[in-house]
Figure 1: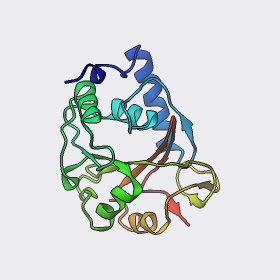
Figure 2: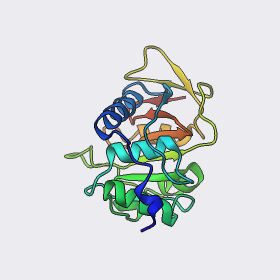
Figure 3: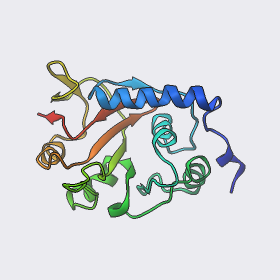
Figure 4: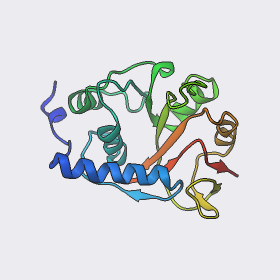
Length: 190
């Protein structure tokens, strides 16, 4: 394992982890609101925000799929050292990390878990790395949104289709640099 894998985690773990958890949960509780995260320095090509989500939500019981653009030795070593999360194929992933182009094909093919009627929480969460994350684009409505809000999503159809599975479905995080926005399955996209 490279020395680089040992670096870039939370410096002050209790404080940084608590702040990161609050930011990640705020993003999911307030869909479309863009939050700024700090506290980690993951290796490229992983963004700071994606790295913070991984450090916050992944552990040895959390299977992770890496899209081809993120599936590099430095990222694998970093995630392994800091979380112990195992790497798996798409159907077994609790979290998947990659660009929309890398993850959307698996999404449309039904390769990510939607949960079950007994355990809807056993679905995948996709961490989508984007080049642009701004409060413009598709309109979002639903729980956690007072009226409507806009977010620069890569498309609308995939999220409309995902909402049809409710209470099953996939949850999303969109990351760009140090910024994060959440899109839970309960959000309606138009």
